[in-house]
Length: 265
Image (cartoon, rainbow, N blue to C red; front, side):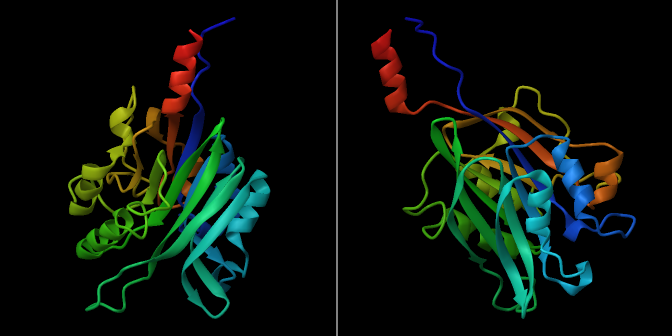
């Protein structure tokens, strides 16, 4: 009997703020966004700034349309809804997936006019195991982002009973590595870029000449990263004001599985 353990499960994860599919040329094109994604062949895509049924983008369900073009399943959560118009975050995947939770994140009581923010949390089949993925788009105010990070790490989200390691928190955090929100997350989770063997330059915004690292992948114990990098090229520079972030993740075997392999040897 061959005692060589099988390779650990892997997953290609993309985070992409698509700016409601409006490119730098002013054209709204879900097909162009889908083309950028398809070139990277991800297993899971976390999208931010997705329009569903909004007049400004022709009333299209962008989450459904991009998923259709890519032959992926999708989940969508509206952080903002006015009548039939919705705007928020989506997760697309080629893998079997189930919804864990979707909901609002706190704003600032003294600034009621801030754009509402939310988070979308799914569980995806990876190999013989499961990986929880939480996608979010944090606010523009520093105090707002800290409040939202505290909520995400608290009992209603990743600090509660629904959280099962391994898990990933991903999205446009509007936070550079020097920010309080980033540091708070880094105290509890690991920036996947720090684990990568060959971390590439990480600036994602603005797409034409990126100088800010605003889009991130944070991982729990049980997840490591082979590569994390920004997707570059003429089409990604044009399709949105953010460049996509692509991470090649690797799941560690569960303790019971490790024990079983040791017993076989």
